[in-house]
Length: 394
Figure: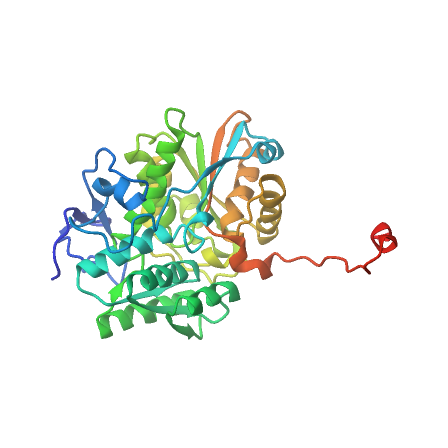
């Protein structure tokens, strides 16, 4: 047992309380990794500074004492008006929460920064993570700043841009011949075997609290005019649950969540439509690698958060996702990776069938930069000779 943190932990399935040790995992009363734990913290007020971990310290499972990462490593990400995109989608107002402005280009930096703080507090020097790319590169970047070793497991086929980040940050990387799910379970086994700190958000209950700062920040930025809807893509389920938790803690609990999965990797959508919490795994096939998860591990939290908000889950086709990447770029000047643009496709779908109204205020969370997966959205451009005649002809 490693030092207890100033929060409470409860199993989402049986409500059993658990000691809030730094290395808390899942409830052993349930088979496999099903008994994920939820963090209960009596957060209030705001702290000093712009860094989310400092500003929202009272809402986080952070020990008292000095920070490991330097002040300003994380900074608030902007909430950008997108009036041309709002008009194209037919909504009253559209705002883009651009999480690609984080240090390594994704929302996952919020969780990884918290993971580093907890690992150092617990006396760990190595942190393990399985990922489709973003969580891995965010952990590697934070570990590089803190002087820790990032142990990364990613499936073969991970986009080159994300692998390039891992190499630049000096991570110890293993390319797993298999799916993300194969990489995940191998990482879990290795973390236990070698005594590494487990950064995997789906089983480390504290990591979701790092993502919660996105919802808290949104509530602050929206101030007294809450959004009607917040859209975000879903893989394991951690992000949408965390944003909903943050919005509620920030006084914006009436905002509805629009959660989206690619049609080729939509087991949580299936459970939502069927009115159940049990997940039937699928073989994930989608261009949106960051949310290509066939066996999500935090589906219960995601389903409960969306249902509590009176929101909805939607599935969108890969063609719609790639069109959303172009729409977001051409109408709002934001280049998102496919998974991070999927919510735009869901907004368009929900507006078309009347779920979202013509005067609604909508926020879309761009969770990762398109520069990480540029090959998936690249288009050919014409080549010309260096003459005006060639330009005129083109």
